[in-house]
Length: 533
Ligand SMILES: [Ca+2]
Ligand SMILES: [Ca+2]
Image (cartoon, rainbow, N blue to C red; front, side):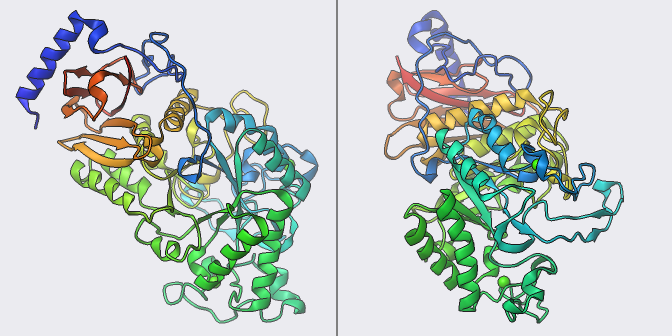
């Protein structure tokens, strides 16, 4: 419940402010391009050009400040029609023609968004085989051929899949990304090969694939994930072969790191060896982001404590946000959840996404409620960890459960295959851009500590403060169907500064000497910073 005395005080302060406008609050923007930004309700964002000051967008200093854009190569952009053998654009499980050259030619799309790194799906030669997959509601019950367009079904780890391009194409992508200050992570698989690959049939690899059927619930290390043939990664010859193949590719192409597939299905001592080799053969800074299914700050520590990787996916973030924003659970519980994410081991990072290629699209799970989706985007961009944007999510790409969670990148009116003509939500993209710019200009959002300031009802207000630079950002999120208000103490140092609303900036907060009154319309977000008078 609100503290009426405080509210009165704030209202009085607002009234005083109106009489002495320059002294209390300037309706100013920091020049982050928020002018013309449509808020959730479609209204323009604010009072452009008033008191604008230059803003420094910091480059990614270390991976604490990274923002990753995840691309399924085959579904992003086709830059070479010469490698489009067996392309079936209407088959949800077919190759659609996207490739390394296509991604390289559209890097400005990602640079413009503000991402500091991209993660691309695996590139080794895929098995020339497509299981027939039973029909699903998402495919209108139609059976379809499921090809290795995603790159996770290797036939040969020492060769490139022609659909994606050549090793020179990969090196060119890395060089072009680096020119734009963007790092490149390649997805690599050590656990398994594709169905019926040479590793099962060629006598040179005799004994490399485990033969005994094992249930993953019984033993995740030796089981067949998704029925895929499991490498005996305890063998020295298997280890050397796979490490040479993947790390060798990184050495030759200048990659910045790997996204590691199916981490919990390979032995810890393999990952320790892997870490040593990436450091000695590629770079001390070679970054490792691991997929430990079900990972969160607690679960991932098993891989962080022996430094097997730098970062892991946080599987808890998206569902937690969706639940809270739909009105499930108390706000104080969600605030506590956000706090617990800060228990991640020092020097290691959670990577938090809203959607992925293995999960149902968040916007679909939110029943296409774009306002609630925007709230989760804002929380993603104001929360500790490495935000991971699943390609096209920033333009409201359609799709629900697998396989439609892997649809083509929407390119709207631009003639870029395979997603030419697919509608884009440019307003949502602008919203992402603004939030990303905000995150990159305020390290408090990427690396700052966290304190919940108000958790009454449907309104969550929290503070992020950069322990080194000292900057503070206040985030206020209202999930409810009514406007909500809270009065909070001004953070240290803000008493002599101007409080500025950075998102949906038409509504400035009322402040007095020590407090600010924050009002947030239904299902919206306000983000406040302070600037020198
Ligand atoms: Ca192609
Ligand atoms: Ca295994």
